[in-house]
Image (cartoon, rainbow over all chains, first blue to last red; front, side):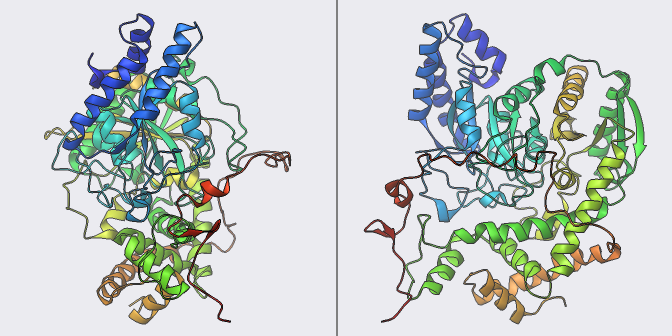
Length: 478
Length: 99
């Protein structure tokens, strides 16, 4: 059995034809993942007991003739910011190195209800803050395509396991591009659904108005299947949307001929020439499929980075206040007074990027600056949001690069936080507007580095997004 | 210069972060660069723009309210399982009130 090349269809067929049982597949997937993991450091820890219990459950259902669910037996990896009851969840932070959550995230519950098998938890930037996974307290992840390069971030581990073949699909989280950018760097599919489409109950909060959970997969169909399983209203998350979840698989089959595609001119300026060339070839594929491609403008794009880094740091500084040495496993040994305990625990526990964002967030929220920074950013967010609504009056989908450049070398940008922030330019706008967006592989550079094409659609139009991505994937055949 | 070392120390207090002198120097430079970039937002006139806290989708006014019925919560032992210093069913912290 070659687990590295399995798709969800492959797992379904294997189980149906009794080529393997769910327990056999799980054992082999765990063995393979543990053997391969040292090459990338993508998994932080494995959950064999939980995986085998879930696999036995699938086998028992099959033996009884029951439907074991749409993800039955599928080996899944989960980003380590998503809570798993009884299985360590570190958020890539020293502060939570020993944290064992007392409950499951809703997405995790739904994943297992659909028959998915959680192999383990994946490495990420500390509290999902970063664009390279170099901010993990547990060492960086290497890009499986090019081991001297980063996998992107913050969900670098989840992208890497799917690219490496040590999981069939994975869950990540996206606040400013943390699913799409690593998907693009590792050459896999990554989806950020509409804000509110997937419950965030049990997702460790980073920036609550921007946080999303979404899937990674090696093809569009598998990503659609995973989203199908986890999407929908959850009464444990008051921000989860009531809109009914359509059947994404059936929308994959539709035609894309005549679909109106907008290319925002602001997204095609500062590209490396190879990225620009590959995206242009991708756009040619869409034209051959009969899409009507036009140039559009999203005029407030240049303000998005500033807007994003005010809002996300403000929210992060509030959300991270809870790590104070009282409830979450780690407390400084220097605790003469309560204030000392807070300050020393946080000063010793947080890494440099988290500190930078807590500081920036506390600054923009502080007395005298609130209006100038935070309130201003919230108003600019409205303008960015309106840019998209206006654009979608004349186009059905927007196509852009995911990142201005392919995967960079480990250490290359780590000492220049502003440069690292600026690299998020094409992905943060989708999060600010709350629209669905995804990265789909769009070829490789001469050096063999993957480049991703981003597709964005209207709120809740994941079906259209998958249809276009699926048709592109089939026609481009990368 | 957008931010001074003194302001950095003040903000570190707001964020409950103990920082070394070295960190203060580095953070001051980083924040200064970032705040200078962020100043770009002032180019935009937003006098008549409503602020947006998050993307809201259509839903009935009370749709997000669930029925107020009892359900099991996190047990005391589960809640304390990750405590650095539990005791007698509580989270223990350094003394805050002197008798």
